[in-house]
Structure formats: structure tokens, C-alpha cells
Image (cartoon, helix red, strand yellow):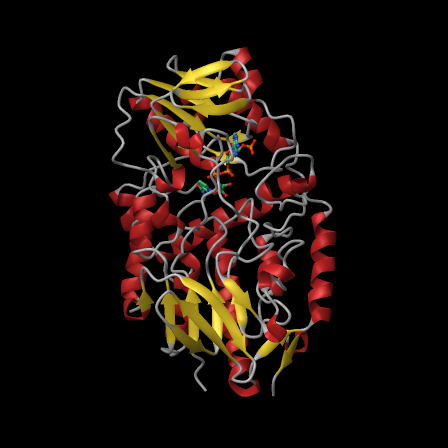
Length: 479
Ligand code: NAP
């Protein structure tokens, strides 16, 4: 039996899944994509300066090395072009349904198949693989008066390139990784820029480097060099960055490094005080950028820490008064704790996934949920990282799911056992105890109840070990 697979989403995860199906000779799959192109977050985020703060040789597929990265940290157009190239090279396009959002997926127990519904039709699939990502639903803040604003306003992940910022008064609400990347670019053209900061972030420098033609040729001609560079980047993240989050040997060194970076880049002690975090490094996602602080020191840029009261037609009113603006950019992040919430997912016994997850999303290995047979997730609950490449995690998950598909062919729909789920939950809770995300800060890693549902508390290597192959005893099989 060749399973018929529905993949939801054509970002890094969905493409990885499709490529591995192709490699295994499984051609019976469909990729549903709500957008008009592949690329996921790298299609959506086109703000000026968008790029990745994980080295590109690591933030790419291990099986599809790319020797032509022009920078150590690639910009968004290059990453999108890499993903488009993957879709072409592996012949995924005929399987793509662009501009087609999945609205619901319902497991039909009598057929042992999933009914996948879009706006226009319903189709049956043996397997559903969700690859919708964690950072795909922009979150606008709930500030009174937002709709009354007279100027242009948009979210950073829906950048309105028709709005000319040259010489204008721009207000940016939020100062996370996205804002840190576009603020230097906006500051260069805006007449005046107000950065509204609610909580300062920890910022470490980004050691940018261009890969010139010689370096790229070397990477192309000597694949070993590329392998070594990728491996070095991976090990650096595992052995230097991860311990800083897990109470290990770098937990004091990295904050020291970040504060030195702040001191070196921000001479004004008042501004420095505003930008100094009062919670442990890593509790919120660390910003990796070398251009952010210098932009904030410009005479035409203000960091505003007064509480925002409301948006008025002429600008942003804070507790200290009105800050006039022509344009407001909401760099306020994403709705992250809902995971698959944009799709109505119904499993066995009519169970709704949203209801199962009302106290917090959870999945065995971040991949499978009891009572939802043959539903697998990529980048599901507790699989985000604060230190290494998500593409690595996606590859682990895809390898695991491919292992599951091999079982399916002979034993029918498979469903993770509640006991396996309970053991998994306990092990995640225990590992979470030592992690910095539990410290007193707010972050998108946590759900409304304060439970960390986003992040994987172990190292990336530990995740690879536990997802190497499915353990059949963790599942119930129909046959
Ligand atoms: P984010 O990190 O969630 O930051 C949202 C910002 O908006 C925070 O500064 C937050 O303040 C602020 N905010 C939210 N609601 C607000 C309100 N009502 N009033 C005032 N301020 C408000 O979002 P993001 O910058 O888009 O980044 C999201 C994630 O995407 C990152 O953490 C990262 O994982 C990923 N990302 C990665 C890269 C990369 O290079 N790999 C680049 C960009 C993004 P508080 O901190 O006070 O809540």
C-alpha cells in the first residue's frame, strides 16, 4: 500500500516531507498551501532587512547542501529562492495546491481515512502531515483606537511595500527579532523613528560575513569544507548557546558578552539603562543583531518606554503624551500557542483537537496525539529551539514520520498510546525544570497559562536521538 498523504503547508517543513516522500518513491501526496507560493515564513516576511540569524549552511537541508550562499546569514530573498529551487529540483510543483487553505480535517473511523476539506472540495487521505509552522499567524495588539489611525499601518509580517517611509514619522511597536532587523533599515530613510519598547531584549552580536566568489567556489569544489562548516556551526550552537539556556557553563558568559556588546554600541548611559534587561538571558528569544543598537543611538530615533494608552488619528498616545506618527508598524509577533488552531481537526470519537488542547498544546515527540490516528505534525508543540536550526528539527521529524509510514503499510492506521503520551509529558516537564524559559518573563514560548508549549527543553542532538525511529510499542495499530 502506498499511503495517500496530505501535507498542509509548503514552508521548510512541508517541502522537506514532500522531498522525502519523493525520494521514497511515494508520489501519492498533495501539498495544500494557503499562500501563492512555497516558502512559508520566508514568503510572508519581506520586511526590509529580513534574514535569518542562524548560519545558512546550517539553516538548510542536510541532503540539499547549497554552496552558493552569499552570506554567512542569508537574507530572506536568498532563502526563499533556495526553497523555490528545492520545489523545482525535486519535482514538487505538480503536487502543490497553492492558494488553497485547508479548513478542516476529520478522521472517518469507518474508512480509516482523513476527510480533508478546503473551501472548494473534500478529499480522502490516509495520512495528514501538518506543516503549518509556529510563526504563521501575525498577532496585532489589542490597543484601543487602532482603527482610528489616519496614516498607514501594517504588521511586520505583512509589510506594505507601497508605503513610502522616506522622510516620514514612523512608529514601531515591538522590539523583537523582526523589529531588530528592520529598524536599522527604516531609520536610514525615515524622517523620525519612535521605537515603542515594552520589555528590553537581550542582544548578542551577529558576526556577519560575506562569502565571496572564491569562498563559494571552495564550498562547491570541496564538499568536505561545507560539511565541516555546517558541523562547526551546529556544534557551536549545541555546546555554547544551549548551555546558556539550560543553566550550563555559558549561563554567565553569554549575558556578560551581551552587556559588553551593549556598552560598546550604546555610549549614552540613560539609553543603555532602558535597553538593559532585568530577566535572565534566553528567557525570551535572544536577538542576534549587530545593527540594532547603533540604529537606536541615532539622533532621529527615540526608544519610547512610556506605556501606550491608545492610538489616536495623529499617532500613538502614551502615558507621557502623544507621539505623532505618519506610519505605524506593528512588530508584535505571532499567535503561537494555538498551533493548528486555524484548521478544525477532528479525530476518533469526534474529538476536537482544539478541545483536547484547551489547557495547552502537547504531542508525543511534538509529532503525534492520542485519538488522532495517522495525523503527524512538523514543528508541533515543544519542538521550537532557542539556540539551533529548526530545519534540523524538521528533518528529525520527517525521518520519524517516514518510519511511521513504513509501519502503516502493513498494520493500518496508527495512533500514539495515551501511556506513551503521559510518559512523554512527564519527561518534558522534568527537563523543562532547568530551563531559563521558566524564569519570570513573558514570551511567545509560553501559552496563556504560563506553560512552555513552544520549546523543546533538550539539545538538538537529544531530539535527534529520541526521534531516530518510531517505537512500535508506543502506538496502537488498527491491524
Ligand atoms: P516577538 O519576538 O514575539 O516580539 C513581539 C514584540 O512586540 C515584543 O517586543 C513585544 O513586547 C511587543 N508587543 C506585543 N504586543 C504589544 C503591545 N500590546 N504593546 C506593546 N508591545 C507589544 O515577534 P517577532 O519579532 O516577530 O519575532 C517572533 C519570532 O520569530 C522570534 O522570536 C524568532 O523566533 C522568529 N524570528 C527569527 C528571525 C531569525 O533571524 N531567525 C528573525 C525574525 C523573527 P514584550 O516583549 O513586552 O511582549
